[in-house]
Image (tube, rainbow, N blue to C red; front, top):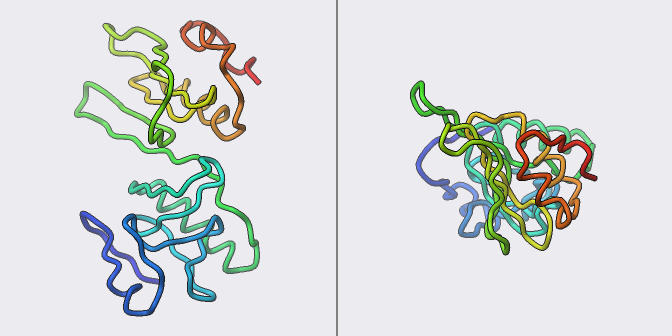
Length: 176
């Protein structure tokens, strides 16, 4: 096992070993396999084909690194499963705000949906692409993220549910 921490992925070891490397780090497939037989990558150095997003992504956060590490280990032991965990990350800003995010939404094609009380500092912002959730940011509304994660992972078309999402008192579990 190699553990590295830094500002950007150091891919020198992978490059010297002849493993394919791209802009986002070590290039991996959906199972987190690299271009070298029997070698997997996870964490900040991993740029992988996301079955959830339908594109290559690279996320640098300790929770993603932990999830990918466990998944890669399972695949090394024979699981042979696609990595389908929706990326999650957070940041606490002193004692006045907790930001959480699921996604990542590289882009979106509709105006973001706001849910909650912006002025009161408890809200979530939902980003949609092609009628589906691409990402969601929460400020002090963690409960919204579980539903955003579910809708994103299940690729649910929420085009007809914009008003329900925007209503801070609505039950999002009814959207399917």
